[in-house]
Length: 257
Image (cartoon, rainbow, N blue to C red; front, side):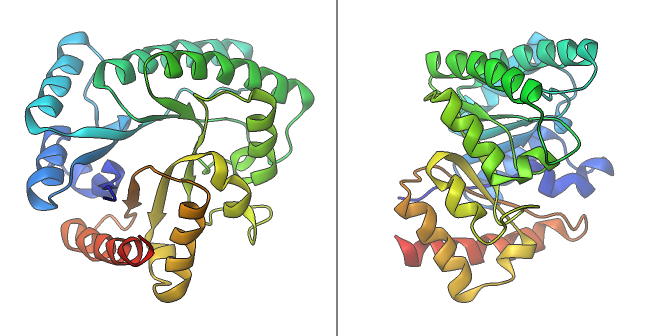
């Protein structure tokens, strides 16, 4: 049976207006959308204090929810300033431990960098750092990697090089479908074998029809077993707009299964 989730950033309009908390998001996931998997953006967390993190853990257990993905802002692996890299590293370690406590399936820690081209120093550093993170993740039953929403991570060949050089079972990518700056026609195909979390947005869902179905089949054929997640970016009428997009994704996955 296929599993679905909704990125909590989809509700950023409600969150920013004070009308939704992380706990309200989890309640909506289970009782409004009848889903079993959450896709949590750390921007919704009020703190990383132990008691608060444990309260979320208890809620997940009580509601029978699994975290398909924990998306972390502010822990980018690469930054030109070594001091910033180290601060980001400490934040990444904190969220690796939160991921362990919550029993997540995947964790997003971004690649960092401002341009598509990566220097050899950058590649070497990122491989070393992700190898460390991937080992921790594998030890606790989850996987970690960047999301395809920053310039270096929007080149599928950059990501393939990282994956090939690491060859680590705990590493993979969180994929925004069809969101490439380079090799757009073949990008999803290149990274499908090491994609650990698939996320569709309105720009792609609106294609509907055979293109959406073909994309789902591409990942299935590559062996993808993860959650099918969606992210609505509109910021208004979020409850209803999300329901619409989720239905389209469900239908495409249902036809592919």
